[in-house]
Image 1 (tube, one colour):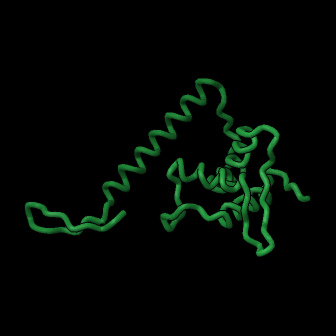
Image 2 (cartoon, rainbow, N blue to C red; image 1 turned 90 degrees about the horizontal axis):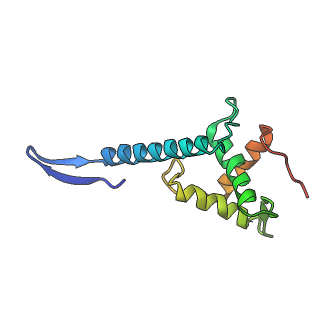
Image 3 (cartoon, one colour; image 1 turned 90 degrees about the vertical axis):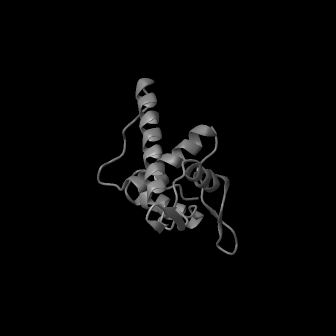
Amino acid sequence: MPVRVVETDLGQKIDFGTDLTIRNFLAAARAINQWARIAEQYGRLKLDWPKNVPLDVWLIGARLPQLYESTYPGKTYTRNRKADQTLYGESLAFVQQALAAMKIVSTEGKPWAVETINNYRTRAIQAGLVQSRKK
């Protein structure tokens, strides 16, 4: 959130945007709650998040890749590297765009880097949430 100077009855004050941040957070929480209610209503919600695994590892490393595979039947979530070791691929881009669509950003407030998404996938494999698919 940008910092701004605002006029009040008592003069100027610095507004750090905290109210907007809280409002946005609550709006996102309400949307997620609504999604969960809809999923429960239609019996599609599977609460398979193991409590010993951080929620972000489960979401980014396991569930969004599973969503990719179910959205595109016949395609497998893969992580590819170019000759210069740069990560690329449709499945990584899918997770990156899904996070952006849900307005989930990194702790720095930036879109998720594919290297970070890859690290979460590795952590999900290490936690036993998904099987490694070595070529």
